[in-house]
Image (cartoon, rainbow, N blue to C red; front, side, top):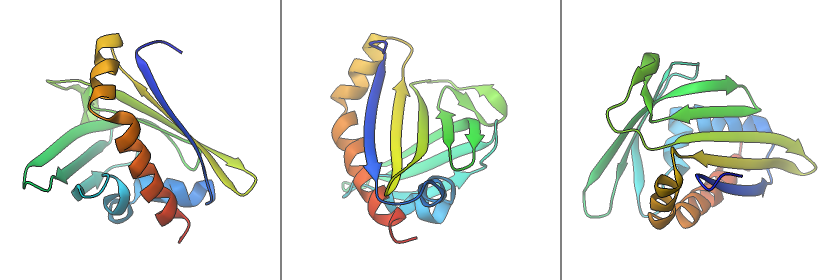
Length: 151
């Protein structure tokens, strides 16, 4: 694995279809996508290649962080790839950061869940790690697992 890639692996006690729904239905994504106490206050998901992937997070201090990107690959229940390197319609983004490649593999008792966070270089991956990738994506994944298990 290149030094420009960060990974998160988990087994989730929910079927891939439920985990997929949590990623692709805005009202579900908003419930788990940001590690608490951060909240996702808006999500716009056009789940098709070139479709918009937009979220807005609200920090406890009131700071709002909008993120605009696009879906690159959508294989229902199996794989989802999105990026902030491109905007909807595959238009170049002004401040690209990373691409997420997420796999949902059916496994006994649920889903083997794998996230690859792909960066242009090692410095970008290091910056994402220092921002708290492991803790933040880990906490959000715990929230995802809990929600998916209820569906």
